[in-house]
Amino acid sequence: MLNFQYMDVKIEERWKKVLQAEFDKPYFSEIVNHIKIEKAQGKMIYPKGSQIFYAFDSTPFDKVKVVILGQDPYHGAGQAHGLCFSVQHGTKPPPSLVNIFKELNTDLGVPINASGNLSSWAHQGVLLLNAILTVRANEPASHEKIGWMNFTDEVIRILSTQKKNLVFLLWGNFARHKKTLIDVNHHLVLESAHPSPFSVTKFSGCRHFSKANEYLAVHHIDPINWHL
Image (cartoon, rainbow, N blue to C red; front, side, top):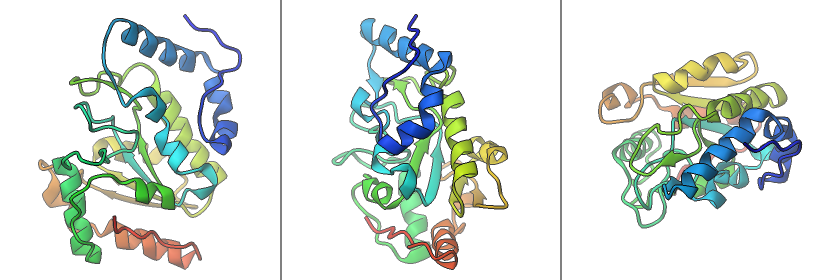
């Protein structure tokens, strides 16, 4: 069992400062230990280690404008790279992402892109946060109970308390349950069904992208260019 008094996590510096108390808690050492054990057993973990905190590195704490919350990373080869709903260049966009693109097209006229890499959103201030940051290959939700949600729940709380006028996009019941962590008096929370093929009819027409930009503009914050 790892037992560090100070966990030196490689992550964007401002995030490191606001999250250091979490990194130093026993549960976080247990997460690290769990992943190390599985790797030593020859198990494939996605995303690769250098990309586990890619969402934070791509969207520094001081730059966050919008938060999109996913559940856990894609579990297929060549997909996950640390951003929820996003896939690596050259990988076919999964069905949920295709439906997100369709809604963008309907809402803002954004052309449907062949690439499913959403890094350009992240670099503009869209935190693409999975509630669970790792997964075993071909085993969805396999790291659901190793402690990641303790960490990401605190990320949401910190964003809610330390920042103002963020937009939280909560798609599906799993994400919507996180609303209790957010101060709705200081942030905009937009809720809908999940964009998966099973519930897309209730997701379509939500217009969350234009609504997010309208809210940002009212608060004198540069809107997101949703084009990829």
